[in-house]
Amino acid sequence: REEALRRAERLESLGTFAGGIAHDLNNVLTPITLAAQLLRQTLAGSPEADTAEMIETAARRGAGMVRQVLTFARGVESGTDRVDVVALLAELERMVGETLADGVALTVTPPPAGTVVIGDATQLLQVLANLISNANDAITAPGTIMVDARLEPREDASGRSLVVDIVDTGHGMSPDVMARLWEPFFTTKPVGKGTGLGLPMVAAIIRAHGGSIDVDSDGRTGSRFTLTLPVDEVAAPSTPIAVDAESARGDGR
Ligand code: ADP
Image 1 (spheres, rainbow, N blue to C red):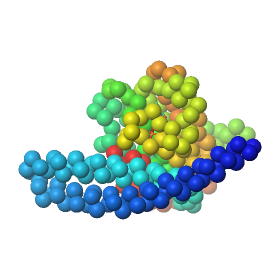
Image 2: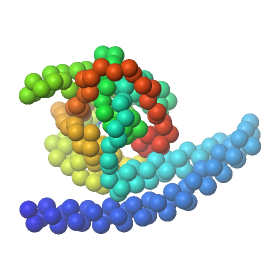
Image 3: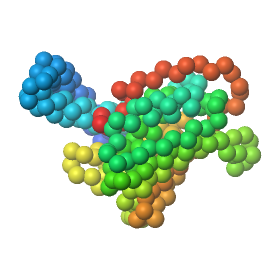
Image 4: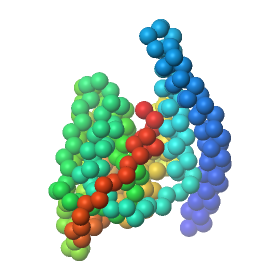
């Protein structure tokens, strides 16, 4: 217990520290991104345009990482929007489609029309985009990422849950890696590629939505992440969801 408390305190001060740096970094990256974008547009058609694009892409990726650190440092409070899951998944496909490596196919199976989760659409998009980005990183093309959403009865038979499987055909995870997945800053990716904050953030958002997350892998042929979220069973006219795709993208890619 004492060890757990010390650990929590250590994490909290680490979070505050990282949050401070992330905030300052953001102020540095924003003008770089804007200037590179302007340059790219001005130089369109000339060979230097590619260089400007490289700067812009790198700065955006940096901003994505900073966003992860900030979300993590600030902690997560879920919202009270009625999130239409079918619309959310359509937005997800549009958003991550262009970020996948060549030869990586994404298939999405939506839940029944009218499935509604109470929470924050941007956060939920961030969760799914992060899991898909990890899956994409784990795959040596060709490969597939399957997002399969459905309604299932709850274990205590008190209604239904939304269950979303994110299954990839990547390299999978060893038991050692699986045991450490949820630790902040745990990453097997090279410096500059991974922050190790993606999954802790995913877990924090899902917890804030009253849900849970499971993981499974045979360590060779791929991984499966399973999200379980409470659904709002009251039928109501569907309201359009406001989704800020740019700020939802987990890693800026
Ligand atoms: P990051 O992506 O920055 O490394 P995460 O917290 O998202 O941080 O993931 C931590 C680690 O978990 C990754 O470095 C990787 O080793 C492992 N991992 C996560 N998702 C997958 C996946 N779909 N397939 C294989 N390994 C994964």
